[in-house]
Length: 142
Image (cartoon, rainbow, N blue to C red; front, side, top):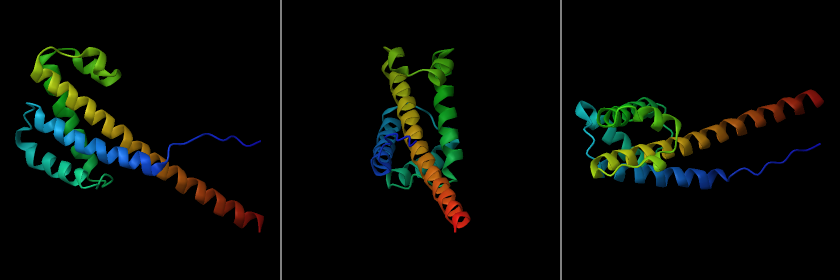
């Protein structure tokens, strides 16, 4: 029995991740988020992302840092919103305050980018695993 599941094309997902990285940089520029002393590190990461360098391992910590900054800003201005942001699509929980809404929009762009980026990484890992299984199966059947 063969189970076939339609997977999104990895190139399409990777392109969507690149586009999401550009949107993330724009959302950051349009938000009032104070990056504090981490601004150079975060801006350098965003420039690399915008250039299509989405999968450098060292960027994961910087993405985590940006996520923390965004969540802290949301929490400071809307106590309890962190739980909503971490567990829900926040489009249903928009703000009337334009600055706070810009930070929420930044959060959604960051969340979307990270999901797309991880999807590509997961698919590449799955392809490597399947390839290794096929090689092992061929060597044991020979």
